[in-house]
Length: 251
Image (cartoon, rainbow, N blue to C red; front, side, top):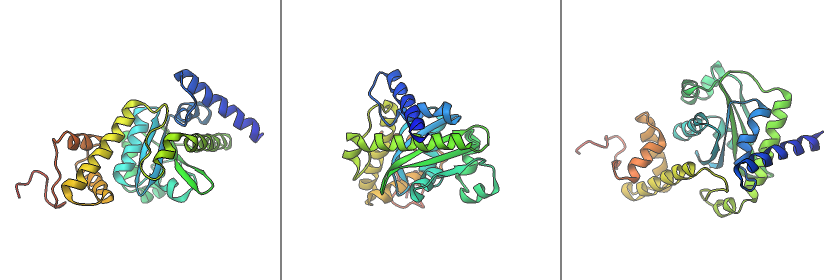
């Protein structure tokens, strides 16, 4: 039975790649997983560590928003799954336990339209390469069959991502990109990386501190991280060295 399930899921992933006219890659797992697992959307984030990561695929705008919310807020199922190396299953984002666990993310996720989220770490042995996240607009747990399929989709994504030359080049740092990644996602990722690099020079801080400052500014202004990064790269925005002084403060 496990072999039959794996073969069925591989065929679905291969069919998703064929519809793109490209070779099979980890990004095909997102589209292939929706119907079998009965979720509304899915996203795959690679190289999740220290609160950062790169979104490799998103089946819809809400999947992208959920990934960006977690990157901005520094909390949520994807970072938790990456840290724990085990699935994080939240069948109802309005639950009291979820509100306590993700004080900022849970209400923000509900506000944009998600009611349930399921995150699966992508790993082979001790090697961790990312997280596959799925959401539903309505609350409700995964059935045993849906959970089994989701786990195999995650295993398939892990193998494909680990085998990609692009991930190998980026293993010691940000992922360089994977075959099949939508150009706009690659652009968003590049803008965030470039903005973070610019802040290290402007603020005289390390890369991690620069990213924290970028994320904090976006959170404080209730703006999307990519929007703030784009403004910094275009030199429409410059953060002050003192995080307690507003950017436009004349001091």
